[in-house]
Structures are given as structure tokens and as C-alpha cells.
Image (cartoon, rainbow, N blue to C red):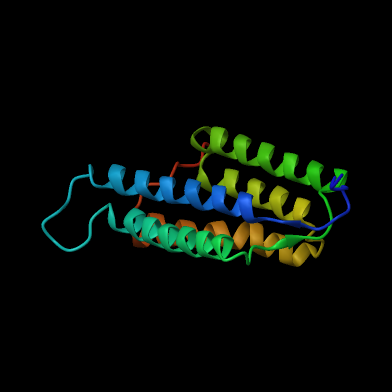
Length: 160
């Protein structure tokens, strides 16, 4: 009998192949959907960034698939523990709440709270770093996208 125990290292070949296929499918979907958007006469347009993201995703999927096929996938030394499972569940729930509440609350407040929760769950304990990351980063993104690039972001729904 050649049964695997839970404390033996596991090579991530099959999960890497599956992730590469899913990433390539998502990239293909991005390309298909972004081609439906109106193209202005000048260079660029609304599809440029999604097409760049799709290109990077295709490259990453190809590299991941290549590593898996060559047998060079990562090895997981220890199985997922209960505390890690809890962290993952909290991060998934926080992401779902963020996605659902983004339009209701607005980009800045929702993103600040989301990043504060996310980084705390990941283990960031330095309060200055936590505030800097969760407040300054969304403000920087807001300035870049809303003011410089003129991309409309969900406005804040302030109670006053």
C-alpha cells in the first residue's frame, strides 16, 4: 500500500495545471469582452488596460503550465492548518462584502475598510504601516483613476 499521509510534502502539479487553464480562460474572456467595447479613433481607448491585463495573464498562465509540465511545480511542505483556513475564509468573506458594498458605500470608504481588514488578517501589526497601506493606497488610486485618468469610481455615500 502506498497511501500518502497528511504530513508528507505535496507537489502542486495538478493544481498548477488547473490554475493555468482557468487563468488562460479568464484572459480569453477578457479579450472577447473588451473587443466589444467601442474603439475611439485615437490610439488607446477603454479596452487597452483590460487587454494588457489579459496579455499578462496569458503569459503567467503559460509560465505556470510550463513549470507544471516540466515537473517543477512548488512543493507544499505542510498541509493547510485550521488558522490558515480561518484566515482564508475571512479574506474571502471580506472580498465578497467589499464587492457587494462598493457601489453602496463608495470606493474610498469601502476600500479603506477592506484593506485594513485584509492586511490585519494577513498579519500586519504595525499601526503606522496599516494606516499608510489602507488609507494612502486607496487615496492614491482614487487620485490616479478618478482625477488623472478620468475613470468614474463609485462615489462615497456620506451620511451628512
